[in-house]
Amino acid sequence: MDDFAMKKRKSYGTIMVDLADGRVIDLIDSREKEDVVIWLSLFPDIKYVSRDGSLTYAAAIREAHPDANHISDRFHLVKNLTDAITLYIYKAVAGRIVIPITKEQNDERTVN
Image (cartoon, rainbow, N blue to C red; front, side, top):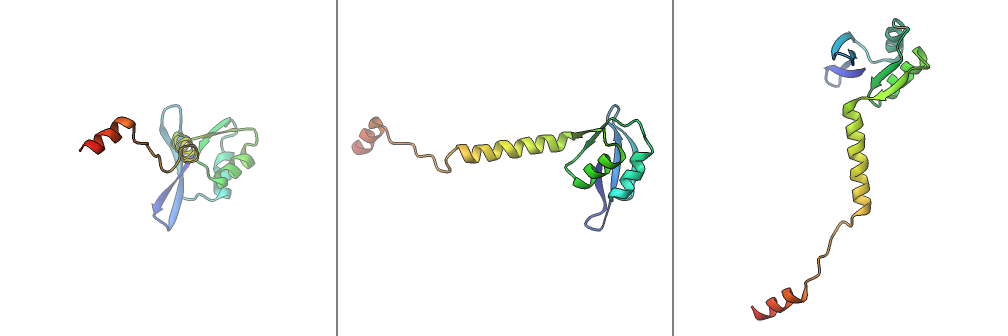
């Protein structure tokens, strides 16, 4: 489950894809919670839903299938991991690394 723009910044829809074979199942011309709940309710056996971080989609899934497992889609999983690693590196590594001049380099500077 993911959203897509029919017209950027104007109207959005929801795409439903079968993760087993990558086939598009349906396109919904809305990403509103109520519309997604209605669509999800048509499929009572859903156990897993791959989605982005949308709180709207999370709420729709919880309402239509309270016992379904939410799985982060691949793009957002990698993006969140990359963001977390980047943040860790910023915190762990100094913004400016100073490399001291060695005695040999200092001797060369005085000779030249």
